[in-house]
Length: 106
Image 1: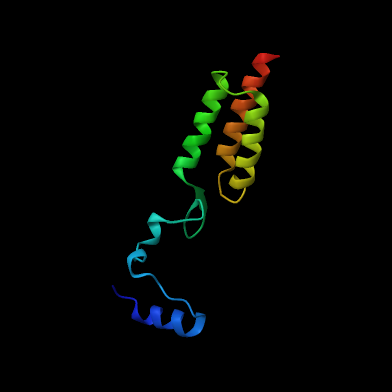
Image 2: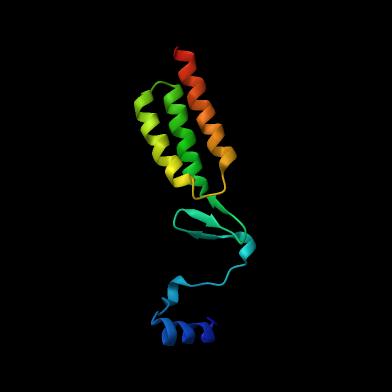
């Protein structure tokens, strides 16, 4: 694989070596999957599986498979993670669904 100049720079200046089987060149328009996010030039999105997992947890709450206290704790953790991404609308959607379900119980 190419990237000899990059490999030399990393080795000589940063004392870092790249693993041959774990490097590839990809267009930035696809984003880079890193530390739980899909990173693009101008934004950071949550991985689809993390969004799907939270949606499943909300469905479990709606189906009364988990309690409000459980989903509240899960959602607090998810929001702490999600705050590092550009997903404010998604966060509001999930919060709205949880509050709507709680309101039905009152």
